Structures are given as structure tokens and as C-alpha cells.
Length: 283
Image (cartoon, rainbow, N blue to C red; front, top):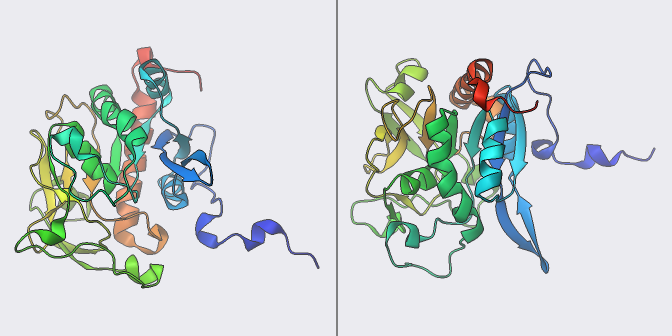
């Protein structure tokens, strides 16, 4: 019997049914990265991030770079934003530093619109979940700086993924993250003191932007998560969490990841139900 082509698609990139799917699902923007495939540029987003939005009980919308006018129209439609990880780094021009390693990938097209996007979505009160590069983008967009090569810093570990290993090893638990007592992440995770996280990044937070609150640190002191309190960065949202690890990786089998995604999804649903009338776009 001829095999259906869909069945040959790896499980991690197959479409998934959102929990309790309905026409009233909150809409979450997933900004794309830019890739040159052959001779042509493409807008792409990792399937694992799209699946993570679905696991949060929301409807994902992958979006390409937009101009200023389009940005406001897009935010009128949104109930939340998920900033993904990426192979590319935030260009150090955006935080006043020279480029440390020109051989590493950059994505100036993504920088050009996600950095302006961040303060605008926060000002509107949109829920935000930022992962890996997304965490770094938020810190830079709000005035912070980055280490471009954490592994070169005295007293710091190498946080990059092990080369030549299978993907399951690369995304496996790498080290503990100590949660900030009394922080919103610790509270979200039931008062835990630490969790095990994966680690696949060379860049990391150097100077944390004003108004941000550390939620977790690696054993070497590197910031692993931060939040934006309601009075920070003109934020009105009840959920703005940024993590350096990858909770989206096989999230269904990870209770911590599912708690993060479900909290994000609940915040998006709440925003949708209570969004200001002036921001009610066509649905």
C-alpha cells in the first residue's frame, strides 16, 4: 500500500491539535528568522516553537518582518508573542559593542523589527514568552548588553551544545538553574528551588536592562531567566517571562515546560477576554 506522505513527516514537525481547540483560541505571534535557502531568502520558524504555542492552548501565527505601520496592525490582532531561539546572534551594534566573531551567524532582518516590537508589545500589555535568542533580544531592546562568548569569560562554563552529538544529547539536561526565592518563576513552578535545564547558547546576559528581575541563574552566575515586573519597562501585562534554555523541546514530556507553556497560554487567553476595545481587531 502506498504510504501517505504526511505519515513520513517526523513526529516533532507534524501538526498537533491544540488542547480544547475552539474558534476563540488566543492568537500568538511567532516572529520568523531569515534564511537563505539556495539563492532565495525565506522566512522560517522552528516547528518546535509552533508546537509549543499549540501546547499552550493558543493559535500560532508565524510572521515575517513588518514595517512600523504593519507592526501596529499586527499587534491589534495578537493576544501574545513568543520570541524564539535561533542559530543567529543579536548584532552587537544594538548594544554598542564590536563584533567578537564574524564567523557566527547574524540576522539583521530579525533584529530590525523584533527589537522595536518588544517595547511596543510590553506597552500594550501583551503576554510575552521569550526563549534563548528571544531572551537576549528583550534585554537588548530594553537597554541591556550581552556577553558574545560566555565560554571565554573567567569563571564561566561553556554553555554551548556539544558538537557532533545527536540532537537528543544536545537538548538534554545540561546543568541546574537556581530559582530566585520569591520570584514569579519559582511561584509558577510551585516553590521549587532549582530545575534542570538544557544549554545551547554562546551569548548570554551581561548587564541586565533596568526594570528587569532575575528569576534564575546557572551555577556560574549567568542569568538563566528574568521577568519584567508590571512597573518595569512600561509593562501592563501579567506575564512577561524570558528564559535562556529551551522549554519548547519535547515539552509534552517535561512537566516544567508544560507548566511554563500553560501559564503563558492562560495569560494569552485572559488578555483576549479583557483586551481594550481600541485593540479589538477583526477575528
